[in-house]
Length: 186
Image (cartoon, rainbow, N blue to C red; front, side, top):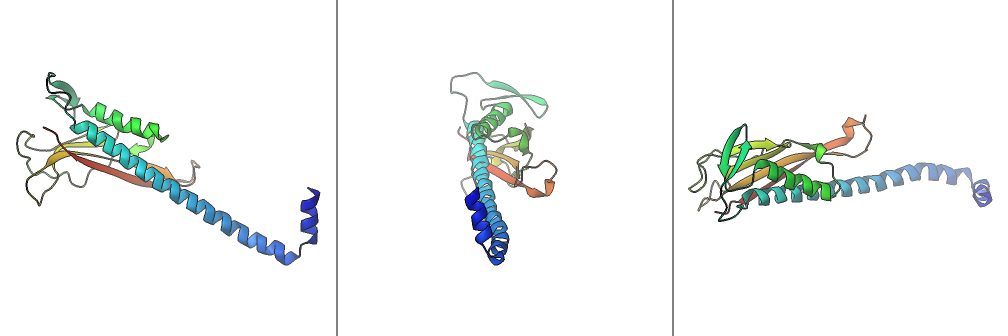
């Protein structure tokens, strides 16, 4: 401690004033770099989580199994694909594995949930449901303007990221969107 007092006592007032001006700017720059890197990391993590959910949604359960009965959108359906709760669990497991809070997820309606019909054996119209604030749209025409038609599933959600983790500073947060689409396997 005595060395610090000697340095301060020997310093001129100009050096102390320069330190007082430069140090906050330097710390703000370092904090900004850290915050941007963390936001980019979260963006790539939520995108991977959406991809995991989309891959889970389109993988058939098995070729010899009986059909799976799910409750989706308030009605009971029979399908050979996983239920929405299984898809949502795949997304939340991927988020939890990366130490992100699945409670920060909010609904994001996908931009390409078009109403164009898919060829058989897909359903004739897309169905969009929500499970655990994760939007799951099945039998969506993925390539509207090209041939042959490809149908698949779109999984989308938003993740709220706070730059400054203080509860009352709501202006320092942003919604990071995640959307993945995968062609169905028949």
